[in-house]
View 1: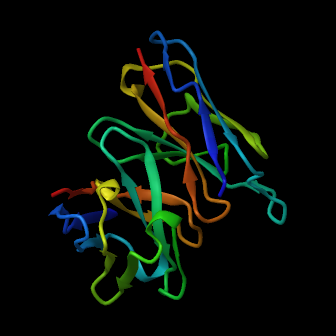
View 2: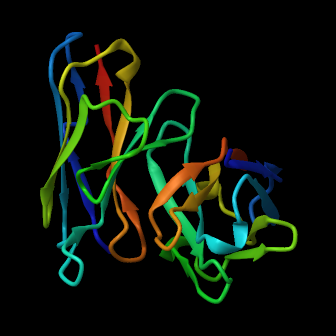
Length: 112
Length: 119
């Protein structure tokens, strides 16, 4: 199984400041035949289901604010919130859909 | 609008069974892979199972293999998860989730249904 490890487990960021979350996979999730990283990011607010933010490691889902961006390839990935807003307080998960079983990181809690 | 509505959760004793259902609407159900993902209280997300759009292929996380069965009924636009031999560690909110068309990427989630395994 591919193990997804996020860092840090939690971080506190001032409003308007940058938040950076890292995700490392135990195996490569870049599929050579289509040159795509099978890596997604989800946001989960308290009492709500997760919401898709980023897929293919860097493609923003429709309707997601452009302050959210994803980067990385292979085994190392980053989610960046360029200017934290109050509504961004949540837990963020990385997720690999490269091979079954699909796996999630342990989550990173972002607070103000 | 895509809607996924789970039902069937509740309190069950260890060793018991439960069947979860997920009613789907707002999209052509038979065109999409579907998933179940669970989240124990205060914990992270764990992928449980998935089923191909036509039902011909399924997959499970090791911890539920042989105990859980995923299925779908395209005539009823409904996804199921039959859970047998339940254990305390199966206690969680179970989310029904849809994959993006043609992919296994999860793009929409239901609100979830709570399963509690306890005596």
